[in-house]
Image (spheres, rainbow, N blue to C red):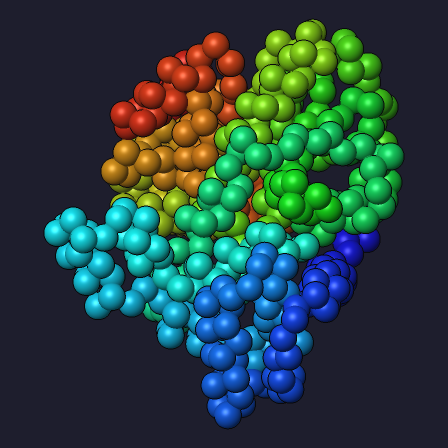
Length: 463
């Protein structure tokens, strides 16, 4: 039932175009003939003329907004090739003018220029241009989407990469967590918003309306951050299950056929999915604030909830184990682990036997193989999740939760039996526990390079 992402994008673009057309009508000047869709080279001077007019900022606020809206409208009317040329022109020709910046710094050091002049000269003209959109209806969303395209271009163009980084600072100020609204989403929310949940869900795909309704039932919660200038667009959302005890299997947790439980009797809140919705806000962190805000909200609404934890994937585990097997060979295993593999395979030995068994279709359904591999993979997973490289956890999801003050609480064998679960981590999942009174201390420990883990996980890592 997953809705085509292109449909959501098309509706968003149409809303942006409409808002810009309405605002651009207030501009007092004639901007000339429209830019052609592919933005041929002989259209570039006219594009630069419009950009320069926006940067000059003549007239009042209405005129400036009108020029910005007209430029945004022109951008949205271009083809993919035209938008690429537009962005490369903006990035390459309106970046930070080095000579002017150095001159301004020297004047400032000599006491000839005020600090405000220094700040202005050290801000790239492209960023100063895009600041104008904050006052245009749908303008903030426009800048967010524009940065998403710059991030893609930045993979092969240094100027586009530099501009995307400059915009991260601008958007980081615009999207400071103090400006964000925490909103609960339920089945009564607008259909357009529910469609976006389906589109943006990045961890466990929502496969039907029944599935979506189950995730919004009375024993479930869904919260999202919104920005006042983007009230129809979630920035990030988290899905929570209210259960008794620590959940260990995501398929059971999401089973729409399971009976609905009484939320007032639940003692644990399981955060099982966190999805970022805006590609253009990559590098701007909301998840840590979201989890803490939601935990505080649930504590007030449901005082019976005493434990807060995640049911999380381990996306880098399989790749890590396979790398160790190829580089370390049998040294990856203990002698007792090597011996335990003998009864289930005589085709290979040691690390090669592990890889051979894991390559077998549905290996986990064979009791003897399951029994042999479980302690091996559990130990390797525990080692992986408690190890660091230059003070950072090896797994990106572990880094996120540990950085937020969580504890590596429990490993769950066959916690995700989907195809993706086995592709990522041989079906294993992990609970990260948030004990609210210890969050700050755990965060400090991790900042100093120490992974905080439960006794159970520490013991599993030792084997």
